[in-house]
Image 1: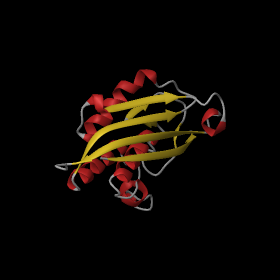
Image 2: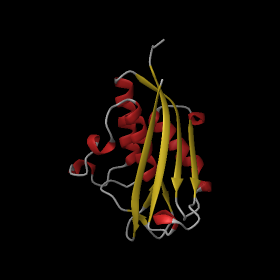
Image 3: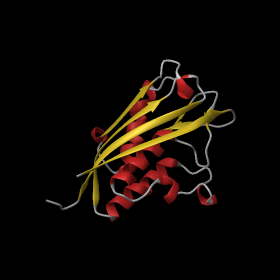
Image 4: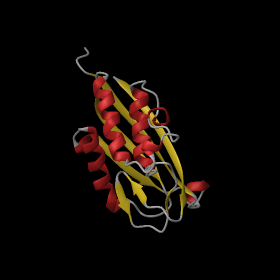
Length: 160
């Protein structure tokens, strides 16, 4: 078994959609980035890639490649899950936390979990998504941006 950790951060800005875990949330700002800037899904991808020692999302989906401009991060996560499978790994679980002062995410978390589980080809009960504020502290607390952490456990298929 192997564990992985992922972290991502994006600045909030006007004129962008806010997408977290593949869910478009009603909010006056969105996350700035080359793709859809889905900070949650990016952290999940990095945790999976790290656990399998397959690099990171910047190496797999560089922001210098126009193919990934505006890319749907859930689709990129599908590709990462396929990469793990091709390299002999099975995803056991994912546990992720979004750090955001606003908006409240509680009502959207079930759909985020489903989107991540579906993209990875795993059961919903293998995916946990949580949200927390930072009590007004730091860039997430002041509403300048959002961050996410993810940890995962993967297992070599057919290993003893």
